[in-house]
Image (cartoon, rainbow, N blue to C red; front, side, top):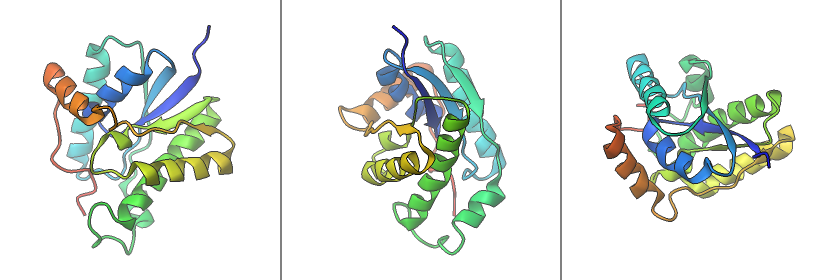
Length: 177
């Protein structure tokens, strides 16, 4: 039996680790690293390098595709919201920005589903992430995989796997605004 194909947006290797552990048995996954919100570029490159290292060392046969690093597009998307704190409308715009590109890429490459690792973080609003994903799925004609990966100790498991693989765990989400 073939597994359904899934394009999994990944924000970083630590979050991706626990999500892959949950999903790999049931989906044919390609990881999509699309994070133009991460500043500075050196931080972006460090997180991408860790993502690649984790996928190489992990026991999964999973491909990685990288979206364009275009921080100016991200800054334009959140213009006027820079002073808002983490967890606010600024973050919701960031979710939408990255999820839209994920959904468009999934549709263009004939994936059956798309989702994101973002909901594994206790600082991310899984309800809002899933609301945005569902809206994009309807708009673009592709299925979103509803998920709240922090449930069932998902975040705790990501921390355990990060220690096991010696993964770099960043101190901030990415935008640094």
